Length: 139
Length: 139
DNA sequence: CTAATCCCGACGAAATCACTCGGGATTGAG
DNA sequence: CTCAATCCCGAGTGATTTCGTCGGGATTAG
Image (cartoon, rainbow over all chains, first blue to last red; front, side):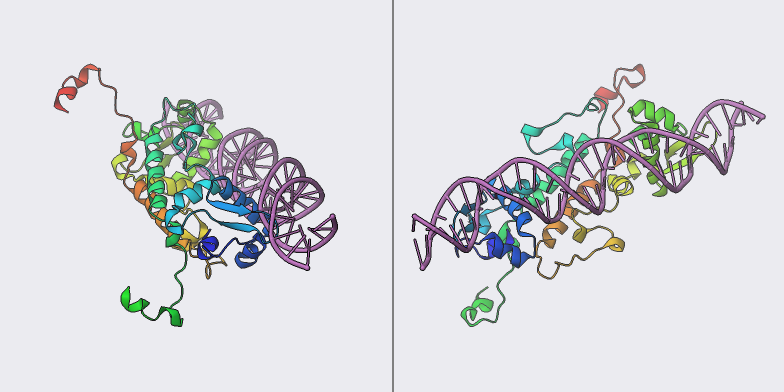
């Protein structure tokens, strides 16, 4: 996703390119990207010169969305999951008082993940190139 | 630990008792308790009528300590671990910008875990017993 | 002495993770 | 039209972790 964030606006990037850049096996990367596509975070273009690209700007993509797409609902424990669909009541729930702890932990994680967007992780362009002369002063 | 918190001050509890109360296999519970003992959270008494008990009051035991004892250092990823001993720099660290995210997540988890003590999870004694008549009004 | 209890190392089944494999479907370029 | 590039997708694999079992030794109260 950071890859795609960096290339945002320059057209689709193929799996082969990304795999080379990130030094990940192409077939594995494919699986990950399919999850991201299913979640609506990236769009694919099929056929020659196809590839993947973000469906929104990096600023608009919260890391919580990315993580949920890749790893499923945020849930430090089964009894404290994000997703009401998969809410699971364990058979100990009557006696068990620990659930409130996991809910707090989950909310802490969600908060941290919600507070960062993909843009926060896309490495800033290195200064020094001549098209950015005023950048240091103006920012 | 919640078990032991409830029994705090009433002498050691044996594995057999706790296993029955919590409906966990005794042999497995044993492993967990050994970790807690190694971490100094519980003390053991050997021999007949032996067992385990907390070494501090429930109020003095942070849940972060319990979790670290049972699950190891708090680390959503290897590159963002709590414990400087086991700090591991992954071979992608030069290109990878995601580390800051994991550090934030880790700190969020640590914060949540530090903010709760075992006492927060020990179920309050049920009211209605005659030695607590004024409790409802005074609280 | 003996029964209750902790101590401890080894083993095992099931789930998960990171990944591979093989082939089918779609599309742009020549 | 054809072909190469590319996405689509289900199935399989090996390492690791998790949750648990097993068997026996050491210690101590009664």
